Length: 80
Image (tube, rainbow, N blue to C red; front, top):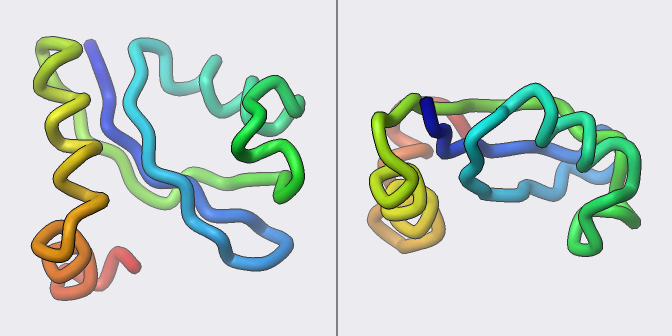
C-alpha cells in the first residue's frame, strides 16, 4: 500500500505533508534527520494518513492536502 500523510513537529507544531510506500520507515527517516526539509524541526509524530493502492493516488492526495480546498477539508474534519 501507499500512503498520503501529515506529520506535526512536537517542537513548534509545523506540519509536513508527504506520500510514501512504507509509512513506519518513512516516519523513522524523518525523526532520524534523514529528510532535509524536516531535519531542523524533529521529532515528528504522525497526525493523519490515508491508504491508497497506487503511488500516483497517494501523491495526488498529498498535493490536494497542500491546496486551499485541502486545507478546508482537513480543518472541517478537525484534523488540523
